[in-house]
Structures are given as structure tokens and as C-alpha cells.
Image (cartoon, rainbow, N blue to C red; front, side, top):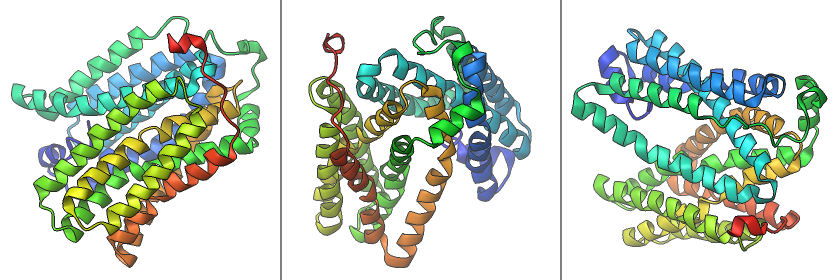
Length: 369
């Protein structure tokens, strides 16, 4: 919502591009990095459902504050609180899902990702509806607040029942964090999941620039190419949701990584604009399963403390901040083609991890039904 409405926010508040970037991106990301890990660890004592409900409630209040903000600093504060609180709530829901279906973590992580994709597709529609109704971005934030409040009320009452230890038996947050940070496999797969940002928004920015400059494609053609990639990504999640019931997750990940890396190389080398669109579709399709499978492996690395896994993932947020800067610097220094090839680090690293990892356990008959 904030990123999509950035232009209208800038016009409404009369601020510059740099201020808008700080308001909608930098400040919320920084606060989330500082706040989310300790709150997630505290949830093991407070209770997942209680903490998640509080997170969605604060998210709703932050969205209401954003709708009423009269200055950039007020908007930045409200968006930062809303983003951090929503991040905590969603991370706890993700952890609860991983605990509820430990034998089908990859399957449910894929479904979770598909839900997020549908939400991303719904956000522009919400803004468009607000514009048609004449309420603008402020009205859209009011609607977002209502949705967050509804989420707080809709949390399942038995959300934490699958946690393997009673509250009294769980280690203190500091001890849980030390244990998690000492688990090498967890750190490796959390870093791999963070690396999956390369073929997300970063791919969009670099690929559009490459299509415009190196393939002489106009704005409409580049937009169409990225729409194909996004659609193929959603299709890839749907296909993965089916195939992960029958194929070992790491084997499926390895196959997709190999095809994705080859498609990225062909995207740079093949001069045809039409081929570039097809290849972007292949990249979107094969990259779709990478984050959910990598995330599931992280939860498998510490199966008895999913909340600590989510906290470690939050601690690695600086890696996701550094990735776009590194790729942009490579584009400036060595050209867009090199920057596109650098994106292949994601499938190649995951390919190496999937080939070196142990085969995941087969999916239970319950998931097949």
C-alpha cells in the first residue's frame, strides 16, 4: 500500500522523492529490523495468539494514523509501527503453520506464499477503488486498518496448540536466540531465503531497465513482460502446491534452480525481445518455489522452536537491504547484463544447497487428500 501510493503521498504532503522513500521504505524497514526479533522471542512467553492479535491491532491503529497524518514524520512513525507490528503478527502465523503441519512444511509454505501473492495483486485494486470513490490514499489506509482489525479478530483460538513444549518448559528468549544462532543449518537456510529477494523486486527493476536499454523495448512492452513474469510466478506456486505432494522438495528445488539459472543466462544472451518475454516467464515460474522451500528447510533445522527461526530470519534483514545496493552498483560499474547475471546467485546457491542437503521426508497421506 505505501509503496504503491508513494506518488500520491508525495503530492499530498508536498515533500520530495527522498523524503517519500524514507517514509515508506527506510524508516519502516529499520524499525522492523530492530523490533521484530525481540518481540518474536517474547511471544514464546506471552503466547503466539495474544502477540499476533496485538500485532494486527497495532497495525490497524498505525494504518488509521497514516490516514490522518498531516506531516511526513507523522506518516513515517505510523507506517513504521504498522509495518513492524504486522511483521510480528505474520511471522507468528507462519511459525504456527509450520508447527501445525511439520511433515508438510514445504507444501504449506508454498500456500502461504501464494496467499501473499494474491494480497499483492489485491493492493492495487484497493487503491484503484479508493481513487474511484474519491477518498484517495487516505481512504485506502482506512480500509487497510479495517482489514487488519478483522485479522486480529479472526485468529484461531488454538493457534499455539501445536508447539512441542509448554510455556513453562520453553527456554528464556536470550537462550533460545543463542541456540538458534548456533545452529549452522538454520543460518544457512535463513540466508538462502533472504537471498530470494534477488528474483523478486530486484529482478523487476533490473529486468525492466535491461529490456528498455539493451532490447530497445518500449514502456508498454516492458510492462507486459513483467506481467508475464508475475503471472508465471503465481502459476509456478500453484503447480508447486500440486507437485510437492509427490516429489521430494529438495529435488524439486534443484530442478527449478537449474532451469532458472539457464533462463537467466539465455535472457542476457538471446537478443530477441519476444524470447526475452518467454524467458522472463520461465524465470518467474521457476523462482516461485524457491523462497517457500528454503524457508521450510530453515524451520526443519530447528523444528522445536519455530518462533526462534522467525526471529533469526528477521535478524538477517540487513542482507536484504544490501542486495539491491550491490546489484545496482554492479549495473553502474559493469553494465545491466552483468547485473542480470548476478541475479543467478539465487538459483545457483539454492541449487548447491539442495544437492548437498538430505532428501526431505515424504509428504503424509493427509496432504494428498
